[in-house]
Image (cartoon, rainbow, N blue to C red; front, side):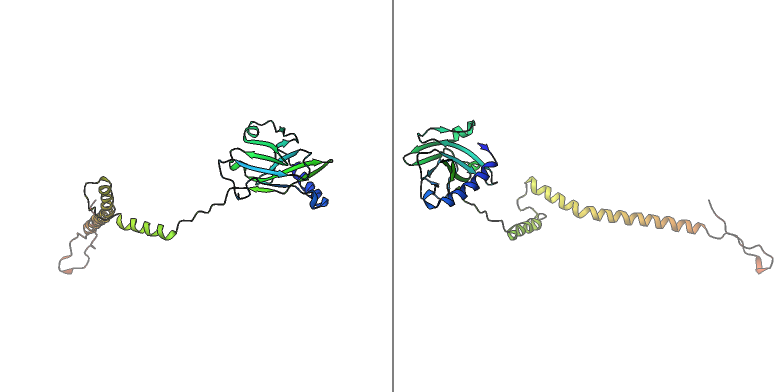
Length: 235
């Protein structure tokens, strides 16, 4: 489908023109099935345009969610159609004139076909725009998951992860038990190793201190003039 920003300006001008002409020159675009509220995906959608002057042709356009206008097809008073050179447009849409209504059929309605549909008529060198017919899928609401249930489930998992297996023989539970044993015994082994190293260091320091004892002879009867005691060091 062709896209033209200028169509938005034409749409606003056309709405002003239809308001100036009064209610007698109004056009209406609507679902062919009056009971329809929303189109269904994958199903055909039929719309009809009711112009006040059937002696002129009608063009169908669609305004998407972003506000862009797309030309779909032109239907002449003799029920001849002209569409853009687009394979999707020619295969997806079909236009015809039946009585006083100009009809548009969307053969396989999909998400990219959603929007507001208008019809335009060029009468006496003036553009007339119809009212818009919204065609959108019904809004769907999804319930958000509650966080309480997720928290409860995670707490059960944390409590049961190190529980002994009531049915031995399953490889998954045996692996969990092995991880639990490693988690318990590994810190204990590390603490014992640190204590052993500290004990060895203490013993070595004590032995070095004892070797630094004083090994000199005392003067007999405490006579003066004796040489002072000099500590000996063993290398």
